[in-house]
Length: 100
Image (cartoon, rainbow, N blue to C red; front, side, top):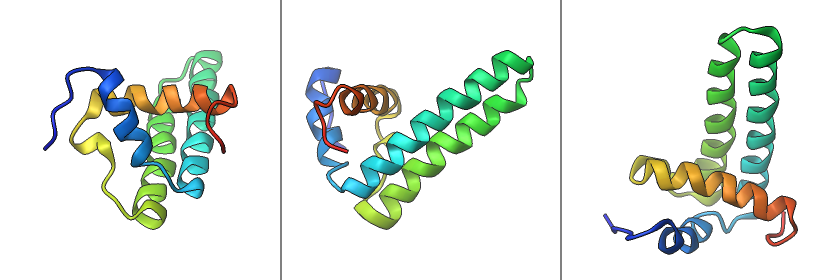
């Protein structure tokens, strides 16, 4: 298992694990879903929506990895950096820095 000294060092590796456009799109959709479900949890005051957010985010991402990238999600080896990478990639897609 490769070690990374910082998130800055990890992020290029993360992007290389998300080179398939369909996989990136699935991650992006899953992230939007997470935000919507978090909003529902707050608006309705119901924590069960948080479970839905968890399944939505990881579900879309893992489908992308297993069926399109054909690799193992970075979450298994680098859970914190991977979580941060999801949101940085989401921001990079929104800002146009990364193609969807």
